Length: 330
Ligand code: G3H
Ligand code: 13P
Ligand code: ZN
Image (cartoon, rainbow, N blue to C red; front, side, top):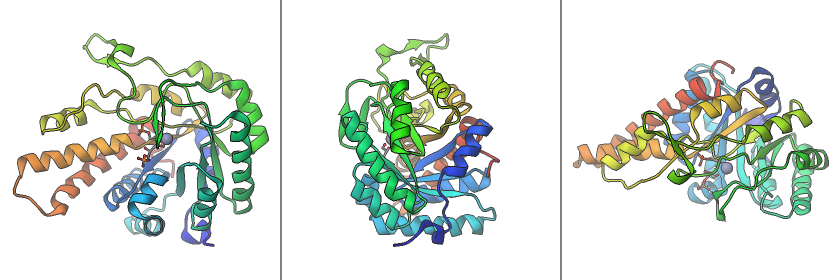
């Protein structure tokens, strides 16, 4: 058993309290390789933002769970070397079993998500409660989920949103003891969150998706004042990345994300953790494609992964400074 405390990591409890009180959200960025981790850490150190490093079960399979844990430990030292100590959480994203959560807790994670959102309500409660009881013995914080996001979540695909029921939230939080809760108010995973038919065009001809269900969020805030809420599926799918990808041989069409103003509004409320993965994938892909197209003779991975890392860092700095408001809060 390795405690995250020995690794210099922190759990999310105090970070969330400060974020809710301060009207901003902590970025939760997924990583599964070195360049992503370097970009996340350097961007958050430079903007003095706390950060949640997220590892999905897919990432564990891709990169190896032991390597990822040591990389997160390395990230703590890397941040110090860069000259400013920021709080770093190592979080399991979309944990789907008690065993997986236990394994992460025992190998140094400071926070886990148990995602029982696809289970019948009482089963979600039972599983989440079991994880909370174990995690809290080790001072590890737990995120649960209630409501179903449309789109793909790991291997589970849902056609439509099942919005979170505010009344269930109180019962769920009370009975499970979770530290934070992911809710469904219209966000979804991936780069194709809305179809063009679901959107309207603004005066500049840009497709604008339907707004998030802030009414549900407000209702939850009324029932559970100050309780930390999490938004998954919060990539904005910046058009410049899609354009670059398509310009250099890619084929992405109708990719639409959550407008940044909506996320800024959410970050000012009880939403204190905002998950972003797809935007990073798009930024990296755009940068790599550009190098491949303009310098076809290049074959040193540092020559295309380096620019991808720079593009990612720029994206993450933009998120902490201009979208989540976490810059300067570390
Ligand atoms: O919510 C899912 C995250 O974007 C992680 O995706 O399961 O492909 O690693 P992944
Ligand atoms: P995006 O696909 O919108 O980046 O969401 C990521 C996420 O929710 C990870 O859990
Ligand atoms: Zn998610």
